[in-house]
Length: 268
Ligand SMILES: [Zn+2]
Image (tube, protein in one colour):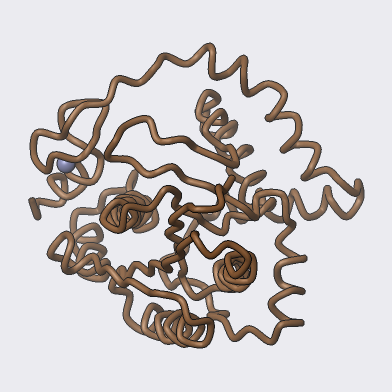
């Protein structure tokens, strides 16, 4: 995933996964004097949740001596997530949840910061559980071809996009929790107040039951997708990327997803 002189931007939310990965990456980076690391935290603007996680992210970065950049929805889009959720709720848009907005806007924010610091990679702390859940979610949603995008290294398909890497994608969540515990890493324990991903939660418990009864089930799912990914990629049409008419960022259509979402809420 990494070269000795890479500049790595790392998404640090303040949860156990991202803080554990930060600790490990810093340890590895010490052996590579030409490499550079920068932690990036997105302040979505979630009262009573983000503030605590932000403090923990800042503290851990200071302790480890890592450069840390913070970017907020407010400065990037003009609105906090709390404000956007108010608008979503007034509109009674059943098909779009706070999570779907937040996910799209957060990915854009992370990519922008990573590009700004000329990072070669944007590392996120997705673990084996996240990855297998996403695979099954895509199947249940009927987005079969999207499974091909669940991969350890998602290379940049456009100069404005930064390559995404997931160093923890083969590590079970339980092992990361154990690491955080043994290393006495203080992390944000409470879930986001907007988390309402009922389907993902059902899939999580199903996979955990499977894993308990049939050890290695999660790995087998990941390996199976790895084997059929080349066929899936060959089936998918190559996406032609161009510049968004409104913001200039990359998009498949005429207007990018973040702009579409903000337009839909009437804030752009
Ligand atoms: Zn746009």
